[in-house]
Length: 166
Image (tube, rainbow, N blue to C red; front, top):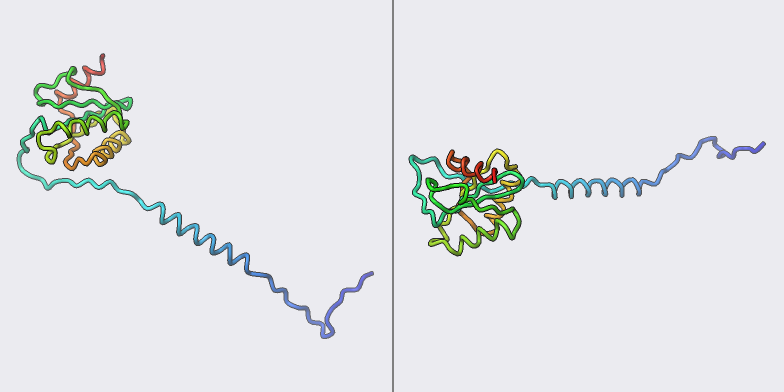
């Protein structure tokens, strides 16, 4: 049988593992977690709200564009006095750059005072949060500084429902 070679004094040599790969792995993990936390910073939509005030502000219909966010990824817009809105006045478009962005840019060119141009966003119950964020993104892209999000009035709801029948 083979004999095991041991040192003369009877002591075994201590094993010394190479720690280099373990240190490399540690630094890779630290780097990975630093990058993932840096790149996953929460993004917040900057939307300033005015201080509450008494009464309502006067609205110029030629400087105001009202967007009604409907279901099935459709947007309806009009530029008319609220009292006169009917389902025939609602013009349908979509959320693409050729859709709602072109409408906003076209109305910006036609506005009497482009700096005071206001976009009123009115989501319906059929609209999704994605639709609202898409419209807000388009207002930012087109440089619209004045925007408001509000509820549909009964007159607008009636016009919207009339549009859905067709």
